[in-house]
Amino acid sequence: MKTVTRRAYIVSFFAASLHAATDGTSSLRGKLRPGEKPMLATSDGRLIGLSGDSPTMQVLNDKRLAGVDFEVVGRFQGTDRFLVDPIHKKSMFVHKQGKPLMISYWCDVCAIRTYAPGICMCCQEETALDLN
Ligand SMILES: [Zn+2]
Image 1 (spheres, rainbow, N blue to C red):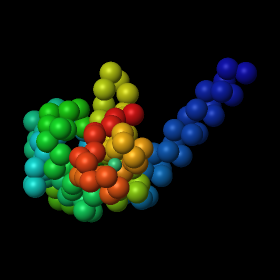
Image 2 (image 1 turned 180 degrees about the vertical axis):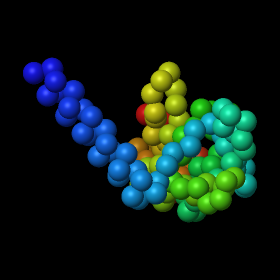
Image 3 (image 1 turned 30 degrees about the vertical axis):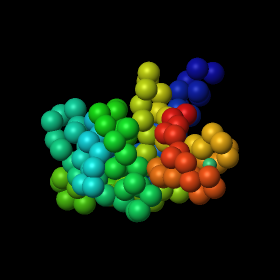
């Protein structure tokens, strides 16, 4: 019985790595340096420039995320540039206490959630960064 379980695990592991190889996506983790030209400082000392669609760039320009343990999913464009997958694919995470947290923005007044920082579309108040 134990052998069967182990084999199932190995098969699913290979299936997962095959999937990663065929669609070309990878993930990158490090300390975020937000800005108009956001960078990720990896633990092995590299500085990778990040780019993405407009809401993704707005998140990457959010000063509240300075220095957080950050992970992006997408693909490398050369050795020092990384293109983050589109915002709807939920490709950015903040790691806290060993857990990947989704990044969103929340207006407490209107109970409206958005995926890019800025003012609330309803009451025009600044939305709060919400990690969960
Ligand atoms: Zn609002």
